[in-house]
Image 1 (spheres, rainbow, N blue to C red):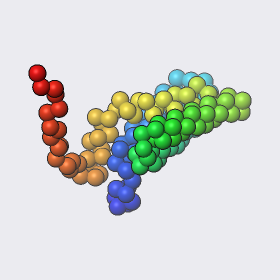
Image 2: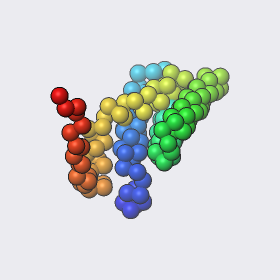
Image 3: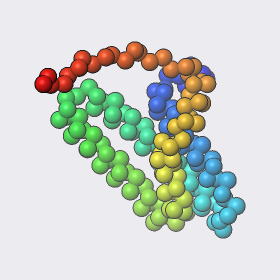
Length: 148
């Protein structure tokens, strides 16, 4: 299992771990609402949407890094629009379907943002699974200032 997990991009793993942790924390609030099933269904639909969005973000960034600057900007803009359109469409379908709570789905989607803020926690989990991150030495840039 550990080998399968370590094949996943480390940053993506940290982001998706944070989304799941946020979803689990929000699930604890289920006793505060009347429609427990609708809340839970909406929340976990939102978590799945957030995880798909995180994967798509990683995938599109990974592809854009191989392109030139103008092509990368165009590709990232296109994929950002596609991702937002997918999220908006999913929320509309959840609201129209009336089986899940659209506000809790939105809460689950916000797990993507919350996960970014929980980086200090997910980094510890990542270090436990992947081991200590070994970064290449920083290259020193030559002093590029203008002489007076």
